[in-house]
Image (cartoon, rainbow, N blue to C red; front, side, top):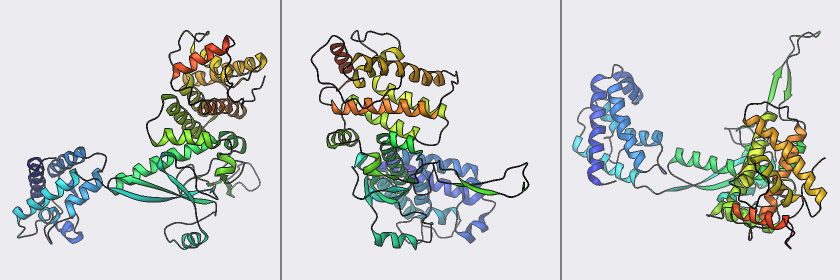
Length: 424
């Protein structure tokens, strides 16, 4: 932002404050609390909002509207003179000095480049050594000394010792950095869930999360009518029937060896190949399916996760036409093993299960069981691991087409790992 534009915005802010002071029906109340409620004077609010929005638009990666609004209203570079003093009709405000102060502040905000190192608590997760830094998030164990300090925190209650610290460098002011960091850590946790989807769905583990964020482990009060004590409420956990926590390395990353971890790190920390990026998105979507949604929604998420990797515009190397058939063929050759029966089994199960996901997507509301969600999730996970194992060879969607075509005609090619166990 240039000096002239910043000065124009500063004058607009001063105009907004002058209108507020002139038309505010609750001026004395505002002086008592030293607060400026811009919404009380719509004309002033519109001027102020338009000015603030221009500054935020000049630096959207760093600025939030709420923090910028607060800074411009209350923070002054000179003692005693801020936009608040003018808006509350404090006498003897030096408008020239205030305009210069606001101009300097606007230029600083519009050109700010700042990061903050934030640390969050992740609940119901056990970790003995630092986790992989997917998305540049550090997941580290909590020391015993830190635990003792946490138990003394007045702002929240510690209910478990299965906890970890998640640390991240986040850009922007306080609000922008907080939202950015939470979004990044949620992606990290979903990726962990996706890597451990077989454990997550088999054990019904939904709980680990940022402290006090959903999906929370809740105690729900309810009562059963028609009994001898119809007015007695009971508390039951809403967290599922399995383990209360997940172990990062033993449960979630047990199938992700060093090579796979390196490929995932490459795809989450810098631009990578289209297929590796598709694998990351697919595993994140599998992680979302581990949360307490309905089975129909889970099947929709899991089938979408499979489609992210295999559902593209197929070339002539694919024999079958139609989305379901083509995806089933690719999956069969990738994880069905070297035998005809193994590939037929995968093909048959993918057609049926992916077809149910398509049914949900197109409003047919098919019946979906827990086992069917878990089975398609297992197949999708195995496809993702297969692509990670062959990341040097499979870089773009067309490479899968070519590889499947070669395999169909008996090309001498290394097989991906067969980790799926399709049911007939």
